[in-house]
Length: 136
View 1: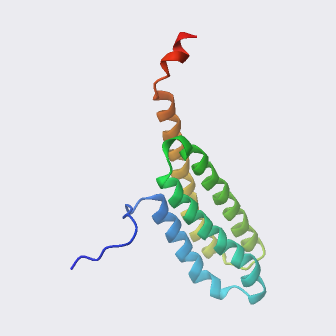
View 2: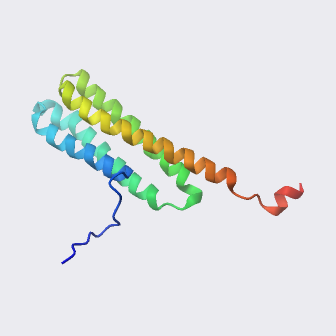
View 3: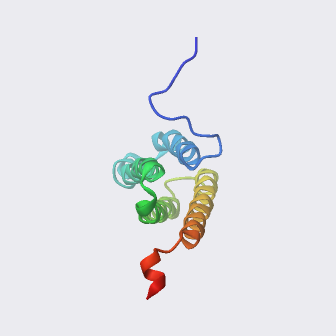
């Protein structure tokens, strides 16, 4: 019997898979954070991970005309997430190893978003101009 998922299958190297891997690392880190930080910055980081997963999923299915804006929004959320993770590390709420594991995963995601934006730009440049625009 083949088990199916309610959402489209994404390749192992997809952005969504990498974000999910980073989130799962974070979920294992959270119980070891002091309670005072767990329910403040810990919750903030978890919410940013979930927001990043959500908007990345939406960006994947967004119409071509709006994809650049959605991917740009993903990059903004990713940068914000990385900022809060660095704050947690500087506050000594997470170890160097935990920080490294999460940031390496998020750096991969950032490179993938950068490639996605580059690809969108290339496709937009190849897009044929409207006939009326050429006449002017």
